[in-house]
Length: 288
Image 1 (cartoon, rainbow, N blue to C red):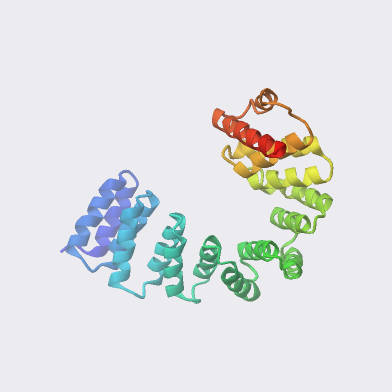
Image 2 (spheres, rainbow, N blue to C red):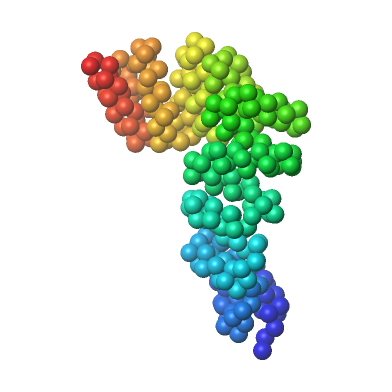
């Protein structure tokens, strides 16, 4: 009978040139060793890597059935559910892992966040931040949640702590910009977003926020450009299109469909159609 370790070595060798051959070696090995956690885990990892998620789920679940205490596989299964945008299923697995696995604890907070369970996410994130200051992403998400849920004093407190411990990174400047926005200090917000921009050049959210801040400090041309930049990074970004239409109409930058179409000419047809539709709806509501 072929030894499990030999099967795994063969599979690793074939992975360099033909992953399907590696899978065949492992599947044949699984028939010989139907209780081998290592073989099923390797199958799960390969299918996960190749984005064959259905099979990856089956194999991770197989490992857990063979060894319910195999925390690493349960962690990977939960992460896969999170990647598949199934936060409820992910949360079920993270909660089974408990608090002894730091990475799982942070991802559990992410699952709460995606399920809009903000208070639960805040509780977990506080535990992480207060016990392990090195998990930077936990700091950032905690601050954003505290600010967005109106807990400004706590948000600023954690913001100051994080800036003091880790310096003024683009993430910190971004969060400061959000904090100033909530306080209607748009000049401060705009300045912070500019400092954050090098770390967010491909993120449409910052351009949207810069557009809103720029309008509120009277920089209308910059507001329009930032909102158009947000739309360029995400053509279906409805919020930025709606905001752009509002600014264009409010300041009489466009007064008809043709002017709007000309202003939006560098965007794709679907985005232009969406902008024209929003424009018509906005003008109609304004007339009523």
